[in-house]
Image (tube, rainbow, N blue to C red; front, side):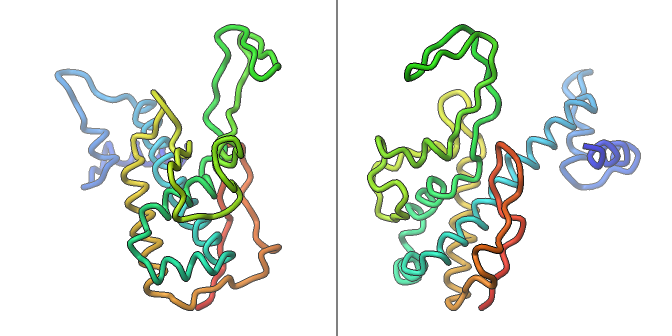
Length: 210
């Protein structure tokens, strides 16, 4: 946030051909975006538009390296990339929980009452492995049918960037599999570290060799 605040101030006096300058200059009649509005937009783009896609690509690559038969399957059948990305979205789930919700009234869910005003964190990662809705949920299956995962949310809160994330994932994973057929994990899986946090799930780094 401190970094963005400084960058917004710089772009107000030193405009460039970039997104922040475009936001600073955006105007409708006499209405301009405030610094807080620009800051909120940039924060959303960084967290929801960048980190989630990075996590999908890195965690998806790890899943392929841990299950080499799936890596080989994509090499032999690159046309499977679209359902493969859908399955990786379900399987690795870059956004592990939804953003905060608060109960507007007392509500009972599966025998548990959530009091009015209480914080609710919906575990998307858990929902995407729910055996009631997915056959063999812990299996990475690129031929899975009716894959209605919740990686992008649902309803009014469905991710606006979903089509772009899908495309980026398809291009990155397909290119990786094609160009680096001998790709393998560079360290013992037990040495991998996951970044802390309640909402996003991603690796600190993914060492590989090829």
